[in-house]
Image (tube, rainbow, N blue to C red; front, side, top):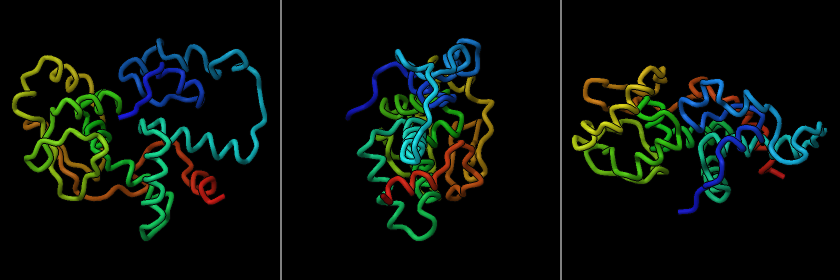
Length: 208
């Protein structure tokens, strides 16, 4: 499966804000956005006035990079959101939030979404008792995510949980710290999603 393999910090600098792609590093003074708050590249420090299309494109790119999704998959999610009842932009964010790797991150079982994706691919979790190693797997209400017994004693996994365990769990999820398991109790509403994304601009972009 294709994935972005270049420097993650360049993506944050390009969007002009933290996308929290590097775990704990994003909260320290080593964060590239804090040290160099301009876009990467030779002309990164030049101020440019963006067109309406440019503003919409940047918003779409920001949302895509928050969740670590490539263009073709993001377009597929938008089509899914358009076909559902309700507000398309909110439907899109709801779909993105219910990805397996994002739910692992939201439960505090990883320090970043890229790390959550790696942990899922390495089969550290089960969904409803069955092994699932597909980061893009879309979870449903009632699904239970559990750390596999063989992974609970892993030093690497213990350190991840210790570092990320202080994260606030959104109200559409439940987390059992003792058993290292979580449950999707409802679908997230727009108020539950704390990302600084203006989804209406993404809808306008795809509607052209």
